[in-house]
Image (cartoon, one colour):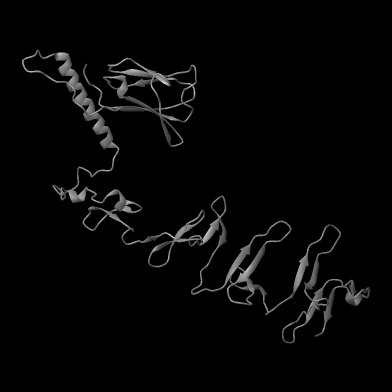
Length: 336
């Protein structure tokens, strides 16, 4: 037999119905053929004559046929079928002095040697290696390619390259230290100015976009900031909260796109009373009311300086007393 195909492995994708898959390389025995089905990253090595049959060896090309009886074994859709050759690296032919030299036996030895070389070449093609074009500055120096630490010394460490480009085992990545601090789902790495650390906060962001990639919320940083907005969710029957946090008794300011003030919500110490705004159904009026811990709560509306309080529209009643005089139709001006 000649070895004319330079490969020792072939792969296919299952579809749930195909049972026959070609072996497109030589094999001396059935035992050296390995059939693996990979499902969602998990490999399963199949058993000859139990889960599949194989062309009688030796062969130049053959066929792996998954059995359908008594159990249905065809590979499912989207699985990967890998058929490979795995030789034992042994030379078990003993040539005796003065015996006849059998050409078939000699050729089989050559065939096996070539197949073993192909197997090594296939493995080499799937490993990390130096490019042939690199300067041969590490010729004869095993330190560039050899890891000398034992398994216990390598445990829980990183594979890295030192300043000479040699392979080394390190406890941290040079220049950027990684520190583990009881990580949990949802944690991210953040930089504390000198090293990367495990954090329970999101990395710094400048804006949040919508599903179309358009700006939805922007965040603008202030140097040495200590106050912030906190959004708190709520359980059933309770309302979520948007609050000013940081220093005590700080309110919230609202501005337009030109940074001009629109609304200021100020805060006082030990507050128990507040303004509540309640919406309304059809034919009913929304309500602005004083609410809080006290039983009787006034509402103060205070103009600035000599300013006046202007009510534009009709005043229906004050303290239950109705007004119908034309003076209260249009603008009602109350002097302060």
